[in-house]
Image 1 (cartoon, rainbow, N blue to C red):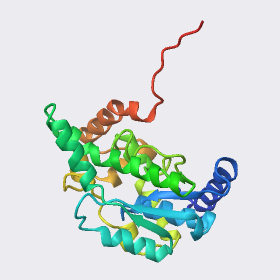
Image 2: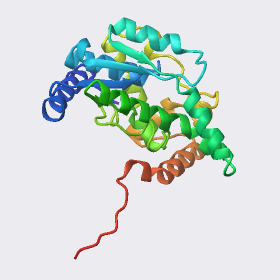
Image 3: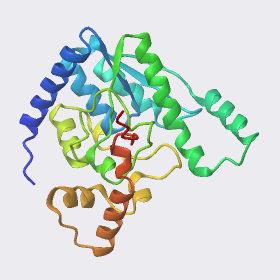
Image 4: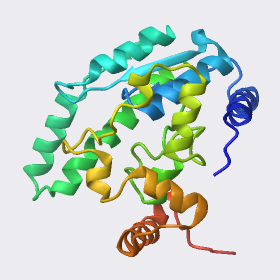
Length: 244
């Protein structure tokens, strides 16, 4: 897999500048900071493209977050303004209200925090005259590893056509410390790593995406099944094609 990290990174930085010239002149890039590689790389790219004074981080623990120090460290490393907004009371209140009316499924409970976080990021963005950065990458999107109307949305998406391995290369090229690039990714929802949940590694997935090669047939079938089942997350909402 041939990946020119220098060229791609420079093109990305210019693409972000172009987006803000056309869609948000004078606005800040607002980013939900999780402490993982994706939000770290997006934040670093935006600092390079717009200047640190035009990047704003939003940290959103749901009660106690064991790795929030990494998120704080990233904001300090990049020297960007940030705010911490704990969504716990909002989450608990909404869960309590729903549970008083109906059975609340575990899947709905797991996906609620990302949706509350995105609502929070947009609210903050409107307070600081911002544009919200989407931080999903191609690998996650390929197998639907995101929450629709949660972390899957945003106003601009720097990484959505780049695999996990490529995102890491960009992070290293930008000089980000290893703690922000190589931290084991977890969903922050059910206590498992991404790869535990997926059933395969990102290295295997990325190779399959870029080359079409997957040595293990069962893994290939699993990836294909997840990809097909989750394509709707990447498509516009269907609308009735009425023509008067």
